[in-house]
Length: 529
Image (tube, rainbow, N blue to C red; front, side, top):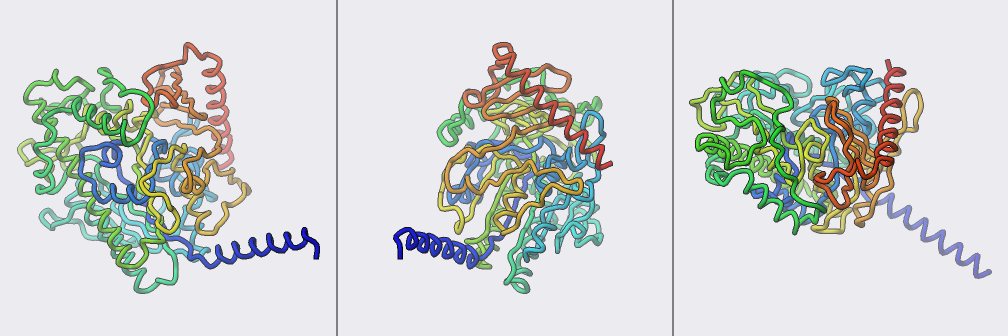
């Protein structure tokens, strides 16, 4: 027997052994936890002072991504996360020549992740906000608690289980959205352990916290009540100081922008809420005593909502542990967009005399605190500057991620999650055919093992006229009806130093690429229509 032949046999044996080991390994479970309007720095493990011990523990036992992106808004992010495509590709956000929004309809080829996972033996569960067209069970979920009233966290009037309407919650029934969403998810997981333990699961938990109205149980608010009298300037500076040590983000803390306020105007707001409201990014020392007290109270409620979200995530993790499933469950935690500068009153209105954060109040975080929540970045939800689109991403999977407490600088996007989970489940993304374009998402799994860049096409954004393109370390960005700005994110992650004048050719090339992608999406939309 020749040496080369023996070597070939050895290599073949190794390959067969690897295939056998791969086949023998149980497919992973997936728990995706999505927060609503959570800022980049709101978690302790991303520099915040808010107490998030459960999420911090997941990060300490896994990974934190520092360059992961969403779409700047709630429903486009949900569409991208569950389909693996940009929301504009699946009819769920607008293009220059195509209307879009929360009422947009997906084309027939745009399936949701559970429909890909079901043939691989997975059962899928949803609890919380939906904000996708269609209904969860028709899209491949086996169980669903759908909270469709976002005007009150204490007594929603519109919610469903497995597609069936549930009775409206009455005031005083001891309901709170974050707790209820976790409780339904835990119920589904417990049922899975009892009746389907031989099958893997995908559990998608979409909290409505800390989205406005900022409301939280009184005891939670009381624990945070004395924390924010120092103001948003001091909180931003303290968060950034911690981030420099924890996250090693390049660049400086972006200064306040005095002309930036809510993205949508509600002229009657101050009449409804009172003189304590502040509708621009102003320095804290320019506020009067009444405004400072009112604003400090609002941030205390926001912090209480985040702490409640963390506590309920801990209950989800405890359920996985009790099932013996935690080791082989990939847990991903992220936010649908940056913190919000919106200011409005809707639903049941706002009672100025009611206790802070109670069910009779309707308040929003607003520009000053949103800017602190998005530290160190500029702008807010709806904008596609970093403050609107950068999300924390925590990944924890003891059986699949050996690293503990490490950072990952790979550039990722919510379009990557569906292809990644499908690949880990043993599936293959469908080929482009029958109107289906190639998926723009990439598999994140190689970054689980090492802090390596992921080869990818430029990332593209368009929302409410705000537009951006990230190509490598370069980002081209413009607010609605404003000229392009250019930033080198390898040195200036906070988008402070605009290089558009110094790099006109790069601006032109990237703007052309942005337009090419937009035109291709327009062409695809015309085919789908």
